[in-house]
Image (cartoon, rainbow over all chains, first blue to last red; front, side, top):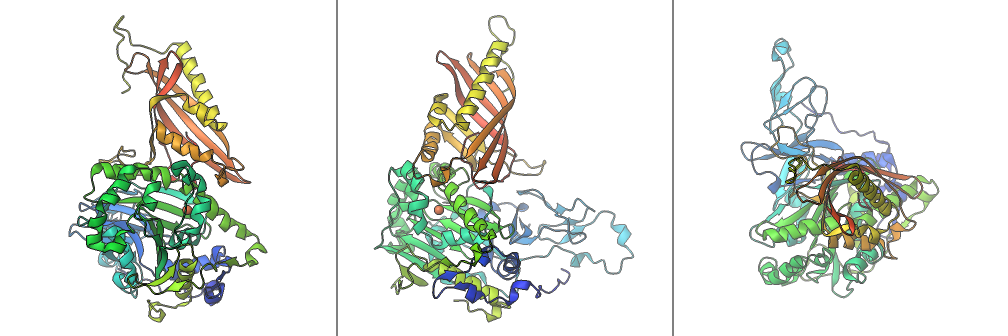
Length: 439
Length: 182
Ligand SMILES: [Fe+2]
């Protein structure tokens, strides 16, 4: 790899006091963080080019050559399995003139050849060959070994593959920290592990990425109102949250809000086989997760791994909010299932999730409406001077004997959202990882 | 799937008469208008009990790839029975479907109709192009185009849709949602 330029340090927003913009102590958030393009550019720099971002599931890479294309922030990347069995992540942009080198969204390839001048890159991103290489015979600074595609660090956690462009980022295990306890609810409830179903659904929303992320990290409150019509259609009644036995947990900006009802989310799929599967396997889940955690496998809950990977236990939709500017995201969704689950159960998830959490789904339709208008109202200069209230549950912190992380009682709470924005402000203020407290 | 079976009586391939073509064309136009008018119960009346509706999510893959743009077992926008479609539509009718009030203005545009014989004596394989235009709120506008392959049956009660497959062109669905059928 040729040396890359230093990160930009002249971005206009870098002098802002982000801890003032998101006042998590008092529970107020300045709306400019959802609108200003300067802040957005700094987010690309200090959040997306710095954090571990989700890029795929190991089950998507069976044979050498299997690849997919996605984004880390707005950086287009190729994720590909090489002949040694390693999964590599590197920029999807030729080192010669910068053209995109892969236009397919997934498939199997031996190499990625640029359409412009025929520069061909291997499954690890290295430059393999170029068209009519003889022209470069007298070119002193042409060194193929230094002209590979810029690689990201890649690590995986129980099937999920993450990548970061920051050489100074902590290990993925450190980055996830105790949040792994909550990830294991879905990733490790069955000895066979997990897989993604074939295919995924991508859609565009005119929303700032943070409205989507904060919704999944901790907005149980919206479910009863936003999704009233979907709940009425599916259950014939509204969504009710149990205030006694429900919690919010957060670690390093990652967070989940959850009940302990085993099947609350799964019921929404409208697929009885899924609910039966959860009930029949509760004792088996408990062997791996313990009794308490086993109750979270399909419970009424949602989660977001900082910055932009989200999922819903029970419904098993996994998704990324890929930023496409300050006011737009591309939502990518997949369905996660236990690899050893019966085929009919996987099929139930596939059809159920299409009816609920997809652009044609009964729940997701309403979410997009809200996030888009929460974003675009801020075009008004007076409007965006008005701070937003994030004060629900300011006094609800508790210690819990089993649950790790910062715990708040009652899942109807803004606590996880405040923790998400606290992490956001920490990252936006820090010049590099060494000045960040990773707890 | 598209080759015309011979008519056993005179060995000539069965062909749609102008009258049949006209009936089918009017059927598709009426069906599209029912969607525009959000008269879902009336729309469902046009379906056979066994109706299936499949709208796959296309994938941009290289031509040499063994897997195609559209595949059966992948995630789909719709892969529904009649009962499942009715469940989706029942949400739009709820008083609490906040985002449906004021309602979306829909226009379904139908063209490129081709009618070919299908295997069943009373069945027709009908191809068409459908474009859905939706306008919402002040300035929201969403377009979606797809090629459709329908199986339409002539019954004593009139024409009935038995199967519909819609091959849309967007790999990334360029809207936040899709709150109609196509
Ligand atoms: Fe929601």
